[in-house]
Length: 124
Image (cartoon, rainbow, N blue to C red; front, side):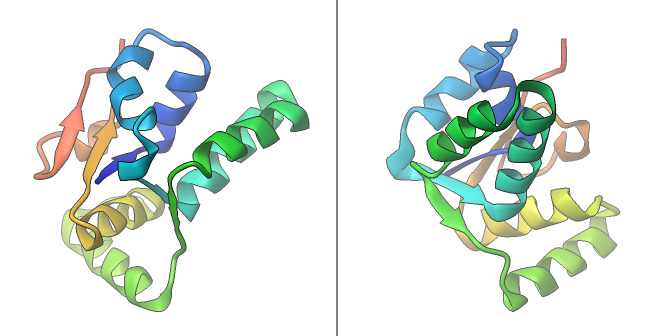
């Protein structure tokens, strides 16, 4: 399973310099995990920058993958990960979600650099 970090979704939707890096994961929705925290972050950013119609279209695209809600078990695992690795809240939820589903995180977020199960690309 693949999990595209929020920055990856935003890069893909904006057709940014690394959009092609994220395309294989996003365009294979049968193997795509979408944590609700990513849905929140992407919807909020697109809403602020491009308006509600664009934000709803982004959310619809994200719903092609498997939406993974933050439940109690995932929250506790994320807290452990955050404490152990000193990750911010959203990043710890993303990592906990990927690990719970044997997923690979696709990202350009430096917090994930060097972690097992991460496909990382440098920010331009």
